Length: 424
Image (cartoon, rainbow, N blue to C red; front, side, top):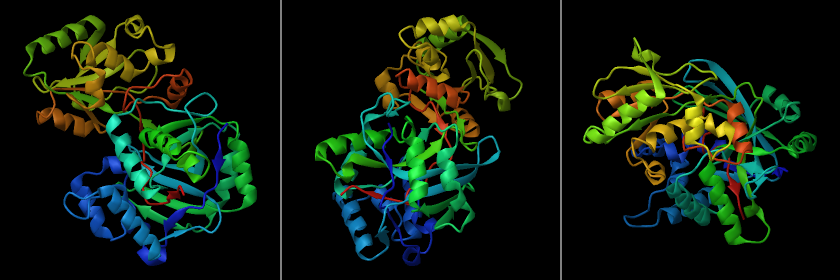
């Protein structure tokens, strides 16, 4: 059972800081140093100062600096705490990579931290070790959830959203528009009847983490470190219904380097592709992204040497079934899993540790970017994938296995800085 509760949130006082645009940022893991500098210049209260901290002096402790800044912002009133618990509604109007304009709707709550398992909360991807240690140190220092976990819940009746949707017809607490044209609007819902309706609707729900696995695993470690009961036993989450019409998933393409200096790997890759795939030349690089749909695995393929686009189609599902014989049936039909088993860890020789630490492997969520990385010689080979349907994500999570990293790309990202959840 999902323990979904309203929270006494920390949030910016817009009369002090000016606007959400000035103080919010993308999630920490998509910000490079140049963008961090741009965000920090927008406001002395921009959230990157605490969510992606830098030491006050060379060689200093960045996490201590984050805690110092957060305490200072609270003392001067730039960040305030709600007097009573509430849920917070967030809608995001966005344009997806496919060019379509949609609106995704959900809400913020604090959710009880438990072990993964049926009826509680499930992951859907393997995680990298580095970010978990970073987020744990930051949580210890600030004793606050600075950015939310994005999770999905099933609510076929729509009862939870029906209780919250009326607030979206009133002026929002705040709004922001990012560089991609995504417009995020935030409302506070303190009505006890609406909160009770949401909690009742989600009581039997199992939550599926869409984005923020590292943060959830950090929350579990932190809760056990502190021990006992208290605010640290809950974590900030943004919850979206699996039935929400604005919920979309897009693919993350795979890129590999280190082949041009190793003819044996080139030959092994070519032999594997001929053995397991039907290979079809394409007329245009615009066709590299395979069409959506069920059926056998299809990949777009291009390398830096020939720079000619191809479509690869798995000759027989039995090939994937044999390669992934130890996994449940839904996983054996997952494009990223089949690619990993037949190619990445096969002829290309990448280990799971290589994949976890991005040694010889890169990702791109944009067709044009992936193509540019091949044409520039930054990578030697690119595999263009289809999106993983939400239905398949649910089936694999229910089977108790995790997908390879970056198997899904939920867009848009949830901005950091809308709300914070104090843990003490």
